[in-house]
Image (cartoon, rainbow over the protein chains, first blue to last red):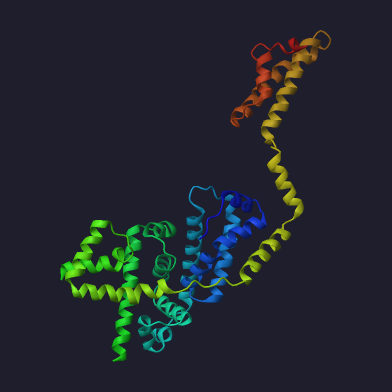
Length: 184
Length: 177
């Protein structure tokens, strides 16, 4: 996420739309991509991103610069997206067969595949994780946050970050093994 | 094998994510040099549980997102009653005093004036002096208790007790003139 000056944030908090557009431009890629990967579809990601920016717009007035704007935005985005995904997962579940289709798709990982397939593969892998695990994987492997930053963003202990990543990766490996086994 | 379990835990998390300190990372690397099973595990974790995410490109932000956000903010701003907004802004500029201290101040000012008047004109209007002084004393105490209950520093109260000795109602207010 790009840095935003304090001056711009203050102007945006006072209702300056031009300043708020600057805030949007600097943070929209992060917000949308985290939303997209955590809720795992475009329409819901648009809804989540829209809500996140409305929250940012409303709460900027009370932002006191005690934490960085970046961490604050990460926290709002990740928490909103996780809660949204949890509501979604209660209303619908993605069966293993639907998520993976033909098992051979995972074997494409080791070959050079085009970006569209890569993105679809990521969608399918993430669909196998619960929203909390998904958020950790997205923040770590897609957004490149450190364990400390993830812990601050999700307001959890650093050991919880570690254990969520461990379980996520074990699950992803077991899926791969299952696919290999089914293929034989 | 137990030793390998420990290293596999590190490979799955801290080692692969670069979260280990130099010494711990060196330990893992030394173990990897001598353990083909753990080397294979590292390769497997990287290619199946990390690389697909790390290699994926960021999704472009849909152009309609900003339009939708701006529209919602503008709609909401228009929906706000301009008069209510004006009053809110005005409230921020002017400090409207609370009612109780204001009334208490007014009572005290009135009493100060009354005592002054009675003391100055008692030779002209004796009944006022007879009925007024004990009543004024009571009202003054009530007004004082209002100020104390509201924990509000009250300028009128300060003036009142500066110029008037409440216990014998000697007037000092006239000294001002």
